[in-house]
Image (cartoon, rainbow, N blue to C red; front, side, top):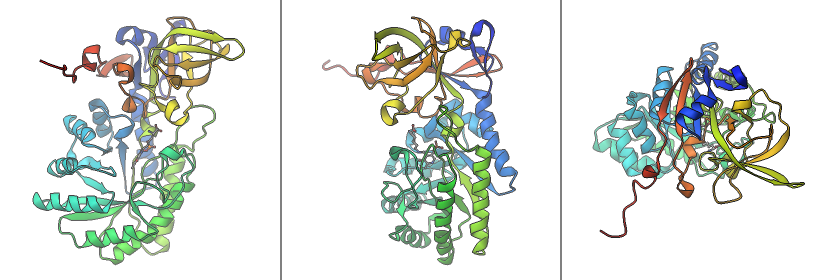
Length: 431
Ligand code: LLP
């Protein structure tokens, strides 16, 4: 995928850069993003939609990986940006993004975040619940602004993914419930609002989804609500079907290609809307993982080992759950290889453990690797989404650096933290 290859001396190259040199120059752990692959994936979404002729918008979900450079890249590639907090919004605005291209999400947006969004002239707010509806209405009125909103709906659809990242089912903290009539009630309240302009409906059913059935089911359920909104006199024009397009972490994963999923979504939209004699709305999607995930690789330096014959062999890296908590959180699986010996065949099974003080600090449970030695560089693949963005300072580990690579050049887009950064916000007991 992308521009990853085995180059001279059996080293792993990404974007024309020797990863062992990247590790030596910028240190480890290091997040390496293949810039061309990021751009190519975004273009695949655009091309897939454009080949259908349907009006659409792709909003990159910043939660997967958000930094100033990443925001700039997605804007360059003609994407909108979906942010979920004041911090992500601040990042995007600092990056110089046009506020009109930004959408704000979240099930518990604070008064401060709503104020910030409205005063910066954000493109749309995806309203999650009744309290937020009232708060936003008040903020918008006070600033004499009209705010475009979408209503987030829980469509009561199971996405068949990990429970923690499944969001469309009825028992969810997100959105207006559809079955109990909450969504319709929200539409009624918006209809009488002078400052809020409801432009559409939103549903996000989950993440790391492999088949399109969930999307099809959600669209089929949303069309009824959409029709009732029109009947109430609201002038909706958008159906946002969220993100969730799955990626391949290991051979066990077999996601439908992006093109297939988009074609299916567009096809379903056309079917269900035209069957009811309705104009097909603009289709918005919010991919995060599928854009950022495959383009990211984490480089670690291998340190100590522990062999327990007949039980398990451990090899330790200089990062772990602090930069990749996904095994600890979801039992996620990854593939890895030795970046400095990339042409060598795996010879055994290793558990790749981190350096944190707990047994759950594992990045890969059973990795097939050559016999690793102290100082080898381990490359863990497809770590571009929800890794750096979920990184922590546990055990007071500084956060890694992030580089974008392209055409043999590397650029630091997030600098490595130092121990001084780790204590920067601390204040002494006295004095
Ligand atoms: N839109 C909304 C409203 C979302 O909640 C999400 C993800 C997305 C879009 C983007 O979904 P994606 O295309 O990335 O699947 N930390 C978890 C994933 C949490 C996803 C949260 N919402 C993980 O590491 O798997």
